[in-house]
Length: 150
Image (cartoon, rainbow, N blue to C red; front, top):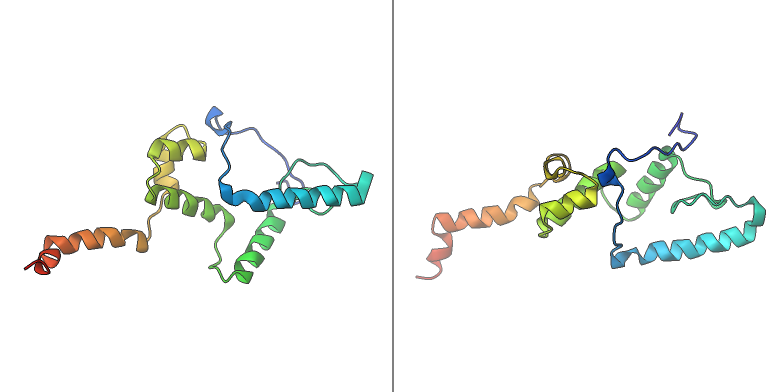
């Protein structure tokens, strides 16, 4: 983003960033949004700009980072979610995948990283709730689980 006014596309940092990703089933909303964009394009005719972006203004222009952030914050507020920076959501997603058994090499590939350590160091961030399973395991150490068997 140049001066928060113009979108400047750069090449990926590495070849690992050049990847195809399968879309999970929950992206049905994106398909509905694509249909809405088609309607807007028909309504505006030549005034519509085909930017190729998934998230774009009603006239097809790309949002600035500031506009995307404001819309994300508004949506978080409407849904009663804790306000987090959109980039931090990336860490939350990778932590969720890691906690649900996705192997490290798949996490790195999804993130567009060539090194698994990069993904684990910067994007997988367990919180207190993620540690609850370990606490339960510790309970077994002092005989808490065995007491119920006597």
